[in-house]
Image 1: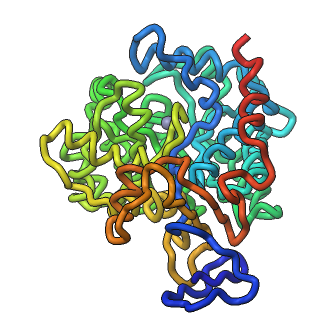
Image 2 (image 1 turned 180 degrees about the horizontal axis):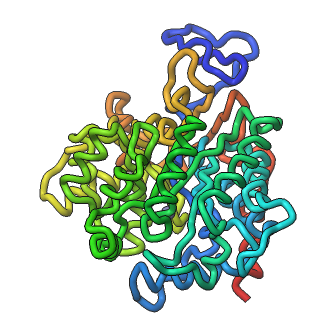
Length: 430
Ligand SMILES: [Zn+2]
């Protein structure tokens, strides 16, 4: 039995003979809420539409830019609301939205410079999901190149204007009714899009605010080559020089990091968020998750492009993809993978008080049904391996965020999620 008070877990008791009066019964297996530590919600609109013509990460990016160039704050709100709602059905209680779609097409400012970020915050509030909005600095189209096309919407011009805008956003959130469920963090898009001086300014902002700091790191070999050509250093080394690496830092992907980079991340106490279903989709490669864990890097997981929203698939892929590469089974146990999907993500997103079933933790819970085809007849001592290696979003029955039901009996309590998705996506593709 789990007793809740004021959005927190007050007590965890086992062996309770009968539930006390007023208790809500959650069938099946109850686990801590799942954290989706890396999402670009708007990319949900690309699902299934990018597979026809082959190509590479870079050709996929052209399709993504075409979408990013067309979206209004209203469309971003609808997409975020629908994608976040889909995430809750999959057991996600906390999402980290890596947000760089800041300004009007061409780069002009909205009357409220944070119109886009506020639209995402409003979407999270309506869905009932906990949110860390990772406001992303994005200044250049590539190393030494000005932004162009859709990238003009991403850029604040310089790091000072980025930090002024994000200060405003953080203060607006802190003074609002959303303060209990929304936090503002920072992100350096990548060393391609943020020069070393600007990266240092973003890192300084995050340190001053005690906010989490994320960056895409070495997703593609071409990023490593560009950094080496321009600066004689790897992306991780550049971020280290900028003062970005700390226990508040999370490297996104880190697919092509070198052993020395893994040592740097480990020594800093940094985290790494792997996004295996997107990394597969974009032909990125398989990251060195086990080597990072061995070096002391805390793992988290993200659905990134939202080409699929299946948190347990992200978790098992860390182990299974590495099996294909190494020929070795079992470097990551099911319990370790589940920890990456829960506690690891909560820590990465600046909510260390969540992601665990213990007294005082945030009352973010997920109930998994055990009578469906994937999990039925599993012995109790094998439930965690079965959950991680065989279950699906469809097995999630109930989701609680901050002590409040968001999903009950497999349905969102307020929203018809397929209709939300249809409304958000129909009409975007002409
Ligand atoms: Zn990303």
